[in-house]
Image (tube, protein in one colour):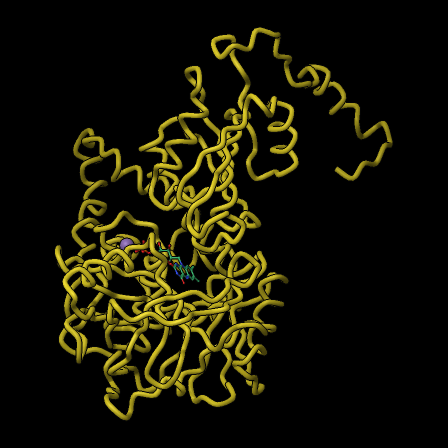
Length: 485
Ligand SMILES: Cc1cc2nc3c(=O)[nH]c(=O)nc-3n(C[C@H](O)[C@H](O)[C@H](O)COP(=O)(O)O)c2cc1C
Ligand SMILES: [Mn+2]
């Protein structure tokens, strides 16, 4: 059974001792950040702040801030189990025999369940505020870091519709609160929300936007999933849930919003209007400096009677978004492997903040294969931003940074094995010579072949022989030697 909403997930975490309710009064200005940061860095619990200065709404944070809670949110026992489940759909083999056919049946009906369904009345519309009643200062929006330009809504599900195709997009783009009725809209130019806004700009039309804050965890997660444009996040959420996401018609804009959301902001973005956004303490661990971004005018707020405000903070890793990022990496790896089949494993170490470093292990089959892999990654969706790609031979444990450094650096002749390319880089990259455009580096750390011009002999890595190892294993207790490992 999928979580119907955010509060069901909170209840699950609480029943497992994974949630702490904070009753002391704290300020949404920096104080919640400091507590949440200590918690995530110290492998602490999810937090529900019940007494937030200046607001009657409780604040939920760090709900996804551990691997265990992330798996709980997605309702999968492990990332390996997910890969098996996905394989069934990506590589459907006709089941052999009646028993196998019957076993496959529930999985096939799972597919029918993914389409969002529309409902008529919804908890997210228990209270409807329009005109003068719209007041964003009632929300306990966090000011996250000392140099931030103001409070930022950090976990919004921004819902928009493509002017041409009519397809809905859901993306998580932070929103700086400017005043009671306006916010920034930080969709970066490579993202689907920005792409759809360009469509409205061409037609010189206002773009209706709805923003859900706090929903069932799979729906929240779907907003960060790097799906190709036109592939529905809500369909993906339905697939994750094994149940459709119930949607309801928004009150003042022609968009469907998650019926079980805590809070929904309705309004519009005028494609021509830009305003200074930031600085914002970002997931790079540095402040993203101010820049021009679109403005979101909020014309209505609908909400539950007693909404929970869901948020997160980003900053110097590890942070909550590192665990969300790991889930993206693990959930999408089976799909990446389908398009770049030589990839055996891939890791984006958390300090590499998603786009700075990808470690890739391949099953090398032909000369230049490592370089082909790099270019395939640079040509695939949001992986185009990857600043450094290290390609290694299969068999390396990518979870062990020591092993990766040893393997990669012994295998390279830098001038020969490093490839520089120019192209789009992440908008948050502050070191590139131009915003959004710079260079990227691929390191071919695979063993070099004669067919690649390497004619010297390549030595074996040192391993003790198995029979000696077994003999010493048997002898070990009698030797009276203590080692730490
Ligand atoms: C906590 C959090 C905050 C994010 N903030 C932004 C943001 O402000 N702007 C942005 O373009 N992407 C942001 N992202 C990343 C996008 O949500 C992500 O790239 C997503 O795939 C975009 O959806 P889209 O492909 O439909 O555009 C954020 C991700 C997380 C986890
Ligand atoms: Mn999208």
